[in-house]
Image 1 (cartoon, rainbow, N blue to C red):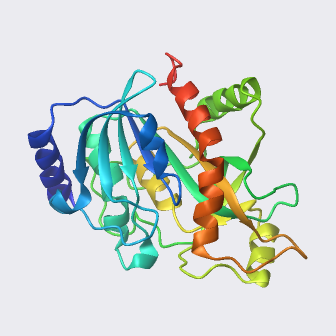
Image 2 (cartoon, helix red, strand yellow; image 1 turned 180 degrees about the vertical axis):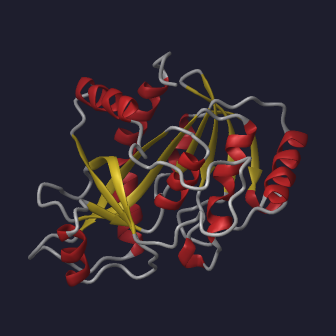
Length: 272
């Protein structure tokens, strides 16, 4: 793992002289945030040694370097998923690489199914905690140079940043919820009984990403802020058939609100 990380870091540094502050992972249908970035360099994943390739529609597969709200950022225009057949090392490699490149904050977005009866399609949920129902990405030999064997997860999502985002949403008159995200392997969408189960165990939304990335970030003591766009519902008596295309469309419709929150958050001088 260490050699893979180093090779990727060295390749990226050979292509651009850049000191990033923030890493942003853009989920399904949310890649258009890059239009707000003053781009300095775009590197396709396929050019980066040791990087996997994203195969999911709505994930362009580029690493974007530039500025957003005056901050130097790296944006992942598309992520990797366990259900694509990638190992957890593959899924989380970009987070490891971005940390070694110097980021001090990780921002993660995703499209998810909502089980909370207060949710509607198009709502934004600020993630305050998660339930991991995937293989843990830290299983296996621990690399002490990356983090400790048993990392604390009592504050997986930075409370101070979460409070700041809540205030920003209120100032922008954007309705947001806060909730718990359940991470599952996919690639099937959930059955009605699965939705009920996730709700019973304490989740407000469910999706097929994010949690491995967050675990690895916290393993490296990297603060995390994450938000979900609710693109379909799994509420009792409201479960309907859903397609990936409908998920992309719902996410795209809500993207401007998500972008506004992130842009404003990055203007805060003491955010990290």
